[in-house]
Image (tube, rainbow, N blue to C red; front, side):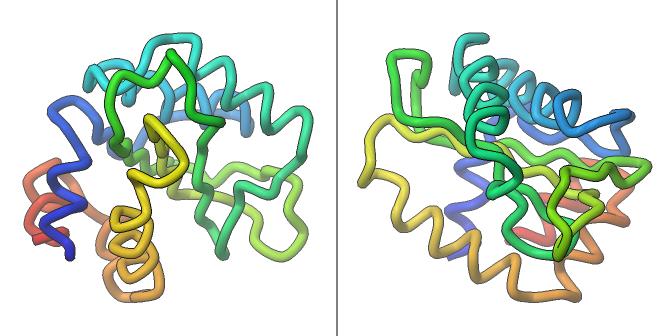
Length: 148
């Protein structure tokens, strides 16, 4: 399952110890990593921010973890992920799970193609030890090794 995560994280999709001062910058970092890895266009990043502005901090799916995403659209070039660790945690406005220090960007070409990817991601995020190792990773190779 975890090999799937490494495949979903294309070259340029991982950013470690990034600086963000608020939720919007955090989402923009995740979106930029999706763009840099050629999964999406800049329109998708704007759509992720708009979704958050419209629907609130529902993207904060677990303590310290946000899953940034928007609806499938022409702005998604291929299904994939980005992974951003923040050097300083950022509040998203989710009382139960703030502040956020891990932002995962998800782009999907349709409503079904990312089901296996979500299962693998869910398995990873339920492992507190692995999440802590991700947050402490010093380089992309450590992340890729962790994801197997």
